[in-house]
Length: 271
Image 1 (cartoon, rainbow, N blue to C red):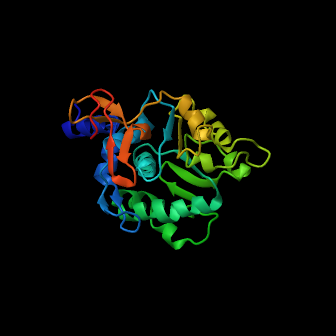
Image 2: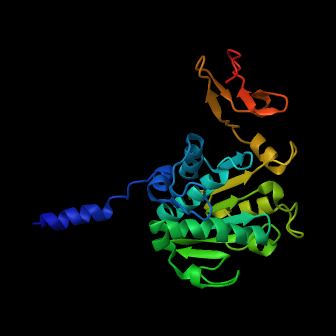
Image 3: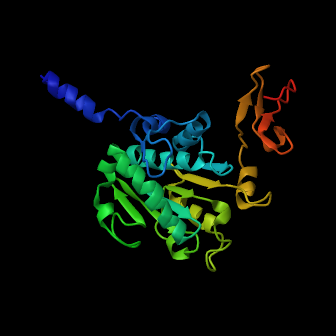
């Protein structure tokens, strides 16, 4: 006859770990460091950021394209994605920056400070990265972070050898419009990075491409045209209808930017 406690332990052992929504993990576990945020402390996502963060584990989504202006919170949403994946669904990851300087800056000013401020991430990645110097080599250097179940490499769009290395399950391309047109003679660095995920096509492959557009013919604009083109909508306080938050719908008195208001496409009220 089976011991009751032994039976319960066996059931717990084979019960799948509850799937944690990435945005819930981010708000529960991530802390914004004072070195890079005006409002340090527990992360609080905006509505549009939550959808972006959760897309990283949406089974119906393989590629996420984010075309947005500067300083609107897209970078923070991407950081939350990465941190949530490291903690809840680890694997081989890749983060692509326009150049080496940008990659190192992202690690120094964004990635490392958030890890140091967030106990869960700090326990997973460890303290070794703060004692290792230099930009190459090591499990916790500026170019690579190891953690249980995987690692993440931070590379430049100019380095074809880094873009064509081992396969990865998730890849983030940051500021795609600033990436080089061709990585040496290898071609589009964005496509090179995506090719590294091919082996994971049936195992949770994710591609995230982010950028502020540099023009209507920009790289991110072309990727956005291939997407389902979701936009941020704002509810009109007068009629309740929702309209996309676009620059064309903004109106203001000349030389008085503080008078700017959003035109409701339904009722014509400016709010």
